[in-house]
Length: 159
Image 1: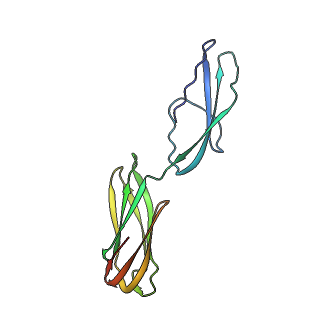
Image 2 (image 1 turned 60 degrees about the vertical axis):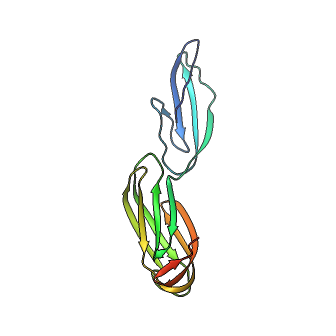
């Protein structure tokens, strides 16, 4: 978030801001918000004569920088990509299959220790079973789903 203020008479003394339910702070440099979700920035300025501007606010949303692509083949895999511009760390992920005849690989989870900006990693689950299955994958706050058919150790027709 970048804030600018002007006062043609006495000049701007301070610009104050807060994010969501935080406390007001003096603005000096751009503020980076990385928490995914909806937010509100509150702000106002004070001129050199002590006049206080009416508080204003602006809503904004920080989108998740994670994309998930689900693939079949030998078991099921998910490509987790950091599409953002900052490195991510400690990303919890899960793969869940809901087929009735899944004997091995119904659920798997883990944590990606680090995922650099623009990089991707593939997580896999070995599967043994038969029949149609739903596939749900989560990584961080993102979720993706697909369906496919399990034939012994192969997962085919993932869409």
